[in-house]
Length: 623
Image (cartoon, rainbow, N blue to C red; front, side, top):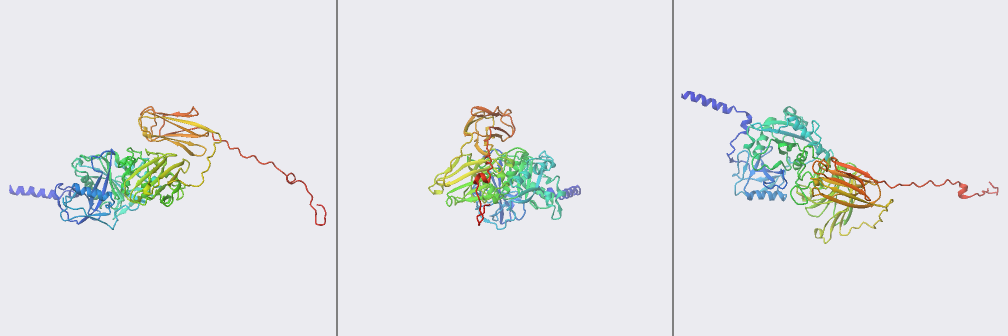
């Protein structure tokens, strides 16, 4: 009996040591903390994209520490005071994700998935000189790896690896995705390429490891409901590293982890990403939504969230760093002027003005979508208003077309943004104002100068390139003698525009343009009330006009979600009406003034002009 028991014990020991490499590396006692030997670690900060922007049930920010080069990141488990200190240091710019070191002592504990700080540890940091893991340059080719994760019970997103690849890179015709949108917004200065672009890395053929273009599939030996958010990431990362044969990020600039879902009471997010770092994590189908993809990669690029007029964290819906478009193939939106300045993609068409030095500036601001059609220092796409503080103002023209056609706020309006860090580094931005034609934003006693700062839109055109004429003045605008207004050749006319909103009024905008000069005459504001009638009257020159109405969702204003409609009248007569369209509808009416060319002058001979006369030679002979 003793020999038999010994035999079975020997078999058990053998089987225990014969476990797979994956289980050896991933499976461990989740509750066993040991003293961590490191004296310091690199702080990384993650930001969650909440599905409901008003949800405050869980912390938006998370802090982790990476030990050494390419090691697993350990989420920091800290008490309330330590956590608030970390948040305060990060918000003030003292902690820079991927650059700042946290000083530890010998009492720090780790179970391989979490770093537990001693209760009385005072948060001490130092700045790292070597930034080699930080995404410093936002240009060039950026290899991207997508990791589709399956748990021990078969939980994974339902899409195949080929479908995952198509949703991220457009490998099978997906029209709007991470690759197409980043390339469009950067005008080709950044291209997100599938992982196999790397070729051979450390003797490993990357393509041989992929299930589809840019995509690998891994299985973790745990059920997702049994893991916390941080442990899910660490187990998924380790499984990917074992599959590839090297530590992440390796040759990849970005890695996307795609999960079936999140479980527990801290799962109100759609995705999260590390700031100025290399990874992002997605649950459910949010990974396939271009707006979510670009938002998370914005964090990898070092961008903070974009707040709206209400000063909430991400309610600037003119920018991908606000709450983005939650729909597949609905992500045609770029970044606001402050984020654009930070990214540096348009630095040959950006200017900085200081109202203290130049009290009156008139600028032709080109729409961002037309950056490649003549924008330069004289006709910029971004204007920075220097305040002589860390917090500056940025101005842009939010032209809603092309890769920016699906933004849901301030379409075809001038946007004014405030952000910190001089616009150069990670900083929460806020929308200060959105201006239509002839509207003004003003600040009294600006920067304690005793003068009022005014920003006014005095002109607008949707020609190519599109532009807005913006005056920025400290005190009274002074541009020399005022020119007399140009008279109307055909006289004036009265145009009435009536909009009956549907169930989603915020999606509806319109503009009225002089079709003969491409000058914008009037634009709509934001409609807030459902199924309500709005009216506007414009008195202007009698000429040909183009009326264009937009619906940002692409389903018109009638008749699926309400019975909306529009009516345009010219001098009391209906010239355009409708409601059933998709993304937009354009109607033209009126006639351009006739330009009568000057008639040719009558033909006059020299005799008629000068008369007849005699010419004599010196000797008096008449010629």
